[in-house]
Image 1 (tube, rainbow, N blue to C red):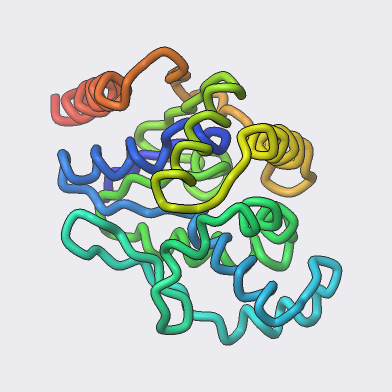
Image 2 (image 1 turned 180 degrees about the vertical axis):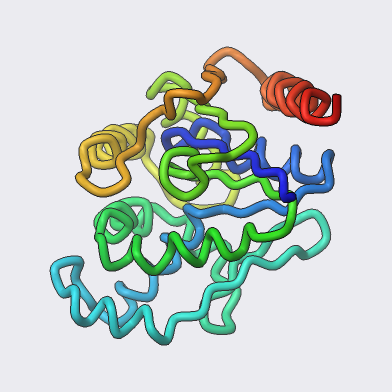
Length: 226
């Protein structure tokens, strides 16, 4: 049986960084659901398709191809044969991704695909609804949270490190708007699963967060092996 670790939480809490490290440490497959929705948003923007144009989005989803590839220590995201790992992390996609990820037609396509990727292998999957919708029976569920100011600060620094022009106040406002949209949307809203363990990373280093979550995981594995 596959062992599933689901990490949910708002943007900027460090889910991706933490999940990648844990996947490497424990030999799990890492799945970034957010990257998949970002690919959908990018392709829609490229085709000038609006979120209200559901028929066009459905047609687009029939031909879209998304791949998550490992390249050494890095994970690449490929869209229709093109490496879009950097492009999907821009502020433009940040501002549009939730408009598409909240759509039923998009969710109905992505959720089965995400489940299929996780079949018959040990995985760590992170996003917004991993422990509530995609894998409600995950073996370990973590809800990673952080103050909104710290989340904005982290995202702002990420932009600068990647050479992406950004303004902190705009990043903060975008983070606020995204959180509101994610928690209030009708389909698969961001929320803590009842059986998820809350980890607040506001005053913790990445190493401390990883250590805390890995202990939770290892304790659960020992429980199953006992």
